[in-house]
Image (tube, rainbow, N blue to C red; front, side, top):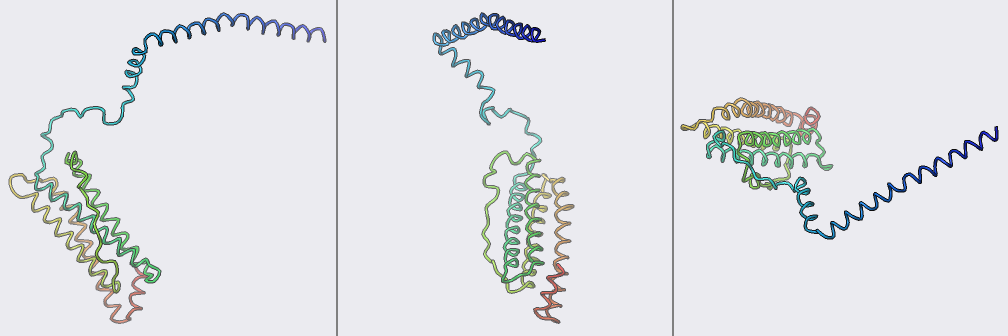
Length: 245
């Protein structure tokens, strides 16, 4: 048994030595090829740079490709209509900022009207979504290929405090009425003349105007209920109304 183990170990050592001997010429061959390649690179450095430049073209930075020429006939919105749409986007953002200010006020620990705060924060989110949808529509019509930087101006909010919830709801109703009038103005501009934009007018009428009118009615109803509760219960009425929002 011991002789058998010794024989196997001897065979393993011989096999390892044979493998090293066999691979030595191959290793020398690889080293020789690397030296030849290095000598060629030293002799022709410009060729090496050109090759690297060609290989790097596939990794070019963004915007390196020219914009291809395509037909422009499908971009057919009237410029007056485009201007009104851009104005409407700004109106939606302005309303969103105003609602954010209202929500922030009623969320203060010294005011503590969580119902009002949630209501106005939700309204701010809806107005932002309206603005985003209008931007998507302009993009779909091919109208956002330039002049994007001046599409929206960050508004400033003049008022940041309200006497009570009823005053805030009144101003919210006035704000919604202003936005509705602005949408109607866009519709009026886009449907007049020979460049009647049927698709945009239908979109604004069936989606935006519908939602605005329902929103106004809902605000008017809440304001009526709150004023009745203030008349009968005073400040307790606002507290109870806040719980119902």
